[in-house]
Image (cartoon, rainbow, N blue to C red; front, side, top):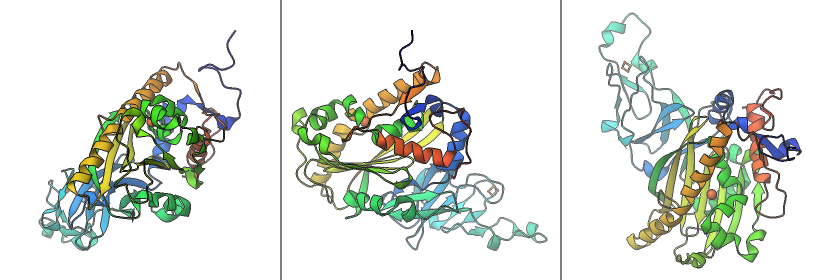
Length: 400
Ligand code: FES
Ligand SMILES: [Fe+2]
């Protein structure tokens, strides 16, 4: 006789408290997510310190589109689809650099554009004399950009609300520590491909229950009496923030983090802020981390991880931040490898159908409650129109 709860049987729980795992594998769901979430919400693409000077640029990927992000001569950061107005070739082909003489020249027929996306030259223009094609009326297609605390966001949807409204006052206030007090600088960036659905990785920063996976968290955080008192807030639009927890690094013979803290951070403090849909911010006292995701397919995700310190760090302080960063994060840190290991283990069973349902039913007065995940999926459902507990349920028209 089958048990009441196994990975193949629909759990006897309220619909908000479990998931139909096909949300992680179904190609139609992935397409709906691209259209209604990834292309409609504000997405973090880089930190201002990565394009510090006039004409500095980077290529970024958003919802399957390649954009070129350029700091203009006037200091403004702008974004454009990296697609030539002539016949669609990629205009900028190096992933990052400084525009020579502030120009982007398409390699195919040599049309050129300035730092504001305006066309500055059409080769052999006489051939267009009797047509409406004029460089004065031609440009790269612009994309909305907003910067908050040095964090650069873009949104492909011209009708979406401004970034401020998307985040809300409470989230912006939570982000102020450590991002909004002093100038920060990215000192570490790496990318890694995860063989799992993007939401599975997002969940690793949304729920505190899996801290039990991490040797570091088990030993230096969860084991402490006051851990249960950690406060968290589920915000509007699926965002969530966790207040300071005190970490005892000494339990693992790691250095305590009690000097040269990031702005606003407490000694040995740890804060977490997750912005829907896929920007994950962590600060462990002396160093900050930003993760962002580029979903490639239902089962493949590119993860970008950044480490940040203060822009005016001395060499000695920066070396300390790098050391603290690499202890926990970075490609050699202990936690990232464990999170990847966990989500790839889930994905395999979801793809082959061994696992049809996931339980997100924890209710407790403490940071291992699952309400943060339920908050995420309420927003996911509002935008996609899918019922996350049952893909066969009639899809409502999503609001994304
Ligand atoms: S496609 Fe760019 S100049 Fe022709
Ligand atoms: Fe984790």
